[in-house]
Length: 458
Image (tube, rainbow, N blue to C red; front, side):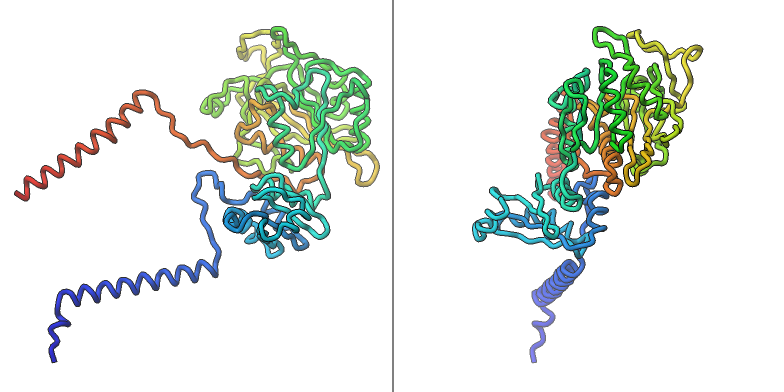
């Protein structure tokens, strides 16, 4: 029998290729089997953009009943929904996802008031909530509204020079409004000068950097609101006397806070924290990297927050209040009483040495069951303005304060991360070097190498 064909080179190559193909097919089959059985993913992005946040994991992990998320789109667009919604389904067996084809089920879409592609509806028992945006904040927000039974309302006081909700400039609160709305709050302005009464639907009252004095009826209204079980956030700037934009002492409001155990001092904090200098902040912007123990800040470890042009706070417990410090300036900080000089200089001989309390949270004992008043005081308002709200952990801190004030401590967590801008900005010299390297230097190396190989073979 002729066995020469077994020894032929072509036969060996064919056998090698066959073995390689069989091995590759076995690996692919095994990989697909494991992928179908164990749905695991790895998020390689720098800020874990494709990983659900701690807040979402907490909300979904504590579900006591089944939840259905219905995604409406054409069948060709279902994959867009699966990329996000499958992560929810993987968190808990109580989450069920349904994909509805708008073209095949127009009656159901009309019944759900869905009018466009890419919308999602969250159903929890008889409750039904629409996701305002199709992203993690939108889906988790709809789930929270279904669990909590509707939206909560933040009332922002206006009329005495406070930061405005409709102001999109650096000093405005338009970003604050957007962030709070995404966290399932409605936002409404309240003018206590026109009517010294806080609407009953207000969940949290916000006093954001008034430059003018509150008259006594306004202060009495705020006092009654909190002492009857209401919730309020006070963001008070130091009474600076610079240029035409002076900030008043607001003595009546300061007296009220002092009676609750928090006294805003008439000073300006200067902090020479070395970390501040590394991130480009000067001494007028205290940088906080360490926090005390409180539900508002327990999840803030590893996040820095900045507070431009701040005043210090003195805290103590009152007859009916319990006050807790939230965070302070560094050991390198000073408090200057000079509030009228445009030249900020530290004078160790006259200025007080830190650290100083920057923010505090308090609870008021109303004497009624389940009716505790709550308040948060921060010696600065600009940290929540458009200019600084996106600075590192400022947004998370503000939302944590909101959730604690509205008694939603279970929602205090780190929110979904915003996409990072990782674009590379080159100056003219760097751009020219890039062009020279990619279009001249590297091709020249290849050409020279080719010529050398050709010459050597000859």
